[in-house]
Length: 289
Image 1: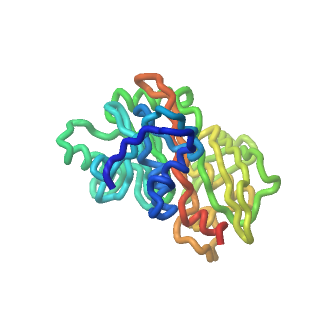
Image 2 (image 1 turned 90 degrees about the vertical axis):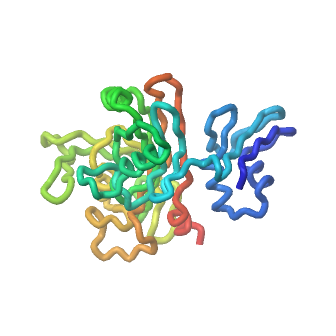
């Protein structure tokens, strides 16, 4: 696939343009193009119903321009001189103190070396090894420090999608508890026991049979917060080896948690940055059958 530059001649929605431009591509390929390859006036756009007006110029990145980390197959969703947003696959650590472990940071540093760049990746937040989705990475210590020290002011929206056992009642609400690190897992208390306050907002978006798809937004960012709170509600995530069911006969083989939205103010330019990725195909498949 080569890079395409398209000038819009008549009003059309973004996904309709992709379908019209790539009529023989699969639905999953069209979604991948929507999620990672569309730029309008240098702005990365992922909104499927984004209205395109006559005169607009749309760039669809081709394979020759698409920066991908080939070894880890980790797409770079956005990159500038200060930071990167990557779509971390499940099974990959965000970072590790062990030099032989593969991680987002080691993959990115390899990427810099291949480009003969002196930059190095700096982690500013983490996703669990088996959680996939959007991860923000700084390209210098100064930018990392700015993000870490002003995280609550910089990051204004983080959203996840999960598949859990059974449908929460009510269908939307807030879970609040105090979390402490136990010997083997994070422990939760509904009363203040000196732990860290954790607040999660949830909304059920799909239900079918034994499963429910839930969107979750974080008011706080504690370790294992979503997984613990879903267990607290009596609806643990599918394939969660720590907080889920021991006899988990889930039809999918991975932890059912994906960070699909990440929105923040750029630490250098102050520009509002918004990124989304599609829900994982294996999540959708449970509800589309």
